[in-house]
Amino acid sequence: MRWGLACAVALLILVPAATGATPQVTIQTTPPAGPAPLHVTFTAAGEAASYHWEFGDGSSADGRTAEHTYAAGSWTATLAAQSSGGELATQTATLTAYGLTVTSPSSARYDRRVVFRGAIVPAERGVYVSLMGPRGKIAAARTRVDGRYSIAGRVRLPGQYRTTSERADSLPLALSVVPKLVTGLAGSGARDSGYFFTARLVPRNAGVLAVNITRGEDVLVDRTFTGAVRIKLDTRRLTSYRIRTEVTPNEGYASTVRVLRANVVLPRLSLGARGVAVSQLGDQLRRLRYAAPSGGAFDGRMLDAVYAFQKVHDLSRTGVVDARFWRALSSPRMPSPRFEQPAAHIEVNKGLQVLYIVRGSRLALIVPISTAGVAGTFTPVGTFAVYRKVVGFDPSPLGTLYDPLYFTGGYAIHGNPSVPPYPASHGCVRIPMWVAPLLYRTVPYGETVYVY
Image (cartoon, rainbow, N blue to C red; front, side, top):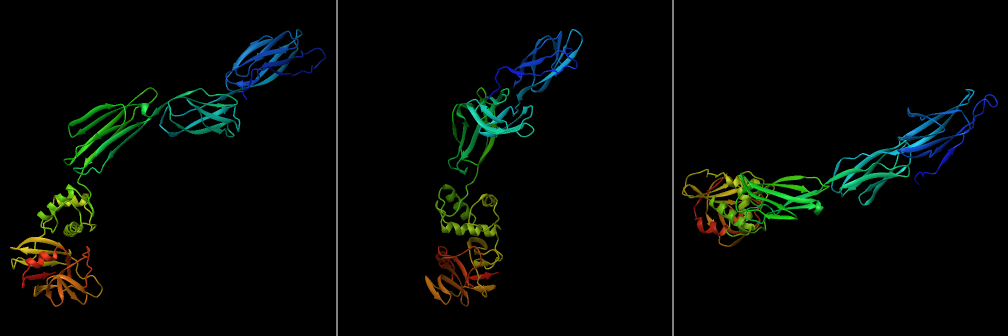
């Protein structure tokens, strides 16, 4: 309940030092307490020749009645009443003018918590203080022992904010709101894919969006939008866009800016991917002499080719075509055969886990392999020759070999459904099933096989 303007009377009676010598007076204050600025009317009851008032804040007045306005605080007023004979009597009255202060930032981000701080004066513990916004109450708190309080509330609307209590109300604060500017990119950014810049403003009525898109020195878009934005970016070539979005605010809102870069990059490809990028990947790998399929499907054959490339270029053998893979593919390392003679031969590079088909003393084909990796097994090292070929499946004590090319004892280069990117065989040289028929057709009896 707020302090009313009802009259409150402080009745104080002086006991005279000598009968009839000292004036007997009382002080009437209207009102004795209330919100600051507190306007008080003072009235002296009782007979005296003169009345002098000291209001306690450095101000004074004379007369049976007086008026004074108090700032926030607790004050003591003193009345000095003097008789015609010179006798003096004094009396005091206490006044309380309550004040409520509040401070906050001058602006707030939309839907973010803002802390409002203030105090009740004079200090009083446990006073219930409410934070009021343009649409009513937002939050509340109670004052601490020193009279201070803090209230955290979410700000969504610009306008007047104030705090109120049963003792007093604060002066209003004008807050502007920085709207939420949500910008983003839809799509992977891969070349030849759908790639869009999007932007929206929350709340929608906070202003309009000015969008500027540049590519190098070229200005591609310079427009203002009143609603949500969706702009398609050209991905036909590798490039980078600079996109600047600025809010031109409506009244009560503040401006904000977002700048982002959109890069058109080569796509991230893995098993199961499809599209033009996969086809282009196969074309580039075949030009570099890797056994790779044609077409737009990233299947197990493409995975074999990717493994082979990663092995030669000392990349992590993930089977994934990522940014590092594309960089290596843009400036590839072309391996060279270790041996020039005979002009047509096979090299098994156990260190890299790849096989080279050499024709005319030049590298003709790179194939991923898996050599001995089972404990207690090994793949022999040396110079050998193909002495036996079996078309199709050839059973052996360690499993069935597909289109094997035996080069020493029971060791063969053969197709196998499992050619992991690490040594895993019992000693033979595993190659992918789909490559085995090619080697069977093109590698004659007696061809030299180097294993190192």
